[in-house]
Amino acid sequence: MAEETIFSKIIRREIPADVVYQDELVTAFRDISPQAPTHVLIVPNVLIPTVNDVTSAHEAALGRMITVAAKIAEQEGIAEDGYRLIVNCNRHGGQEVYHIHMHLVGGRVLGPLLPR
Ligand code: AMP
Image (tube, rainbow, N blue to C red):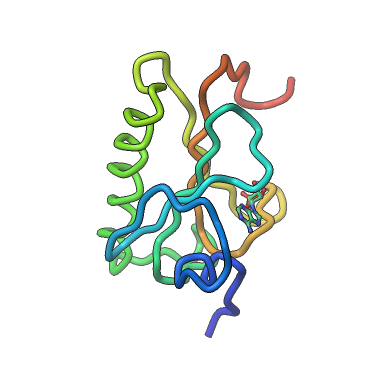
C-alpha cells in the first residue's frame, strides 16, 4: 500500500488549499509555490504514486485530468495563448510529491521545455 501524501488530505478537504475543481475522479488546486500566473495541480482522487504505477484501471481518471486541464485553462483565460501540462516522474523527473499530478502552467511565455 502506497503511503499517502499531503495531496490526499487536500482531496479530502482536511487541510486548506485553493481548490478550483473537484469531481468523483479528480481534484484541481492552485500550486502553493506558483511558477507562473496560472499554476494549477490536477490530481486523481485515488492515490497513484508515479506514472510507473499507472494501470489500465486508472485510465478514466487520467483522461479526466486532461479534460479538466482544458476546462481550467479556458476559465483562466489562457487557452488561446497556450500553456504547458507537465507530469514529473521520480528523481530524474524532479518529482517531489508521490501522488501523481499534472501541472497546468501558463499566463506567460514559458520558454524552452528543458534548460539547454
Ligand atoms: P512535483 O515536483 O512535480 O512533485 O511538484 C510538486 C508540487 O506540489 C510543487 O510545485 C509544490 O509547490 C506543490 N505543493 C506541495 N505542497 C503543496 C500544497 N500543500 N498545496 C499546493 N501545492 C503544493
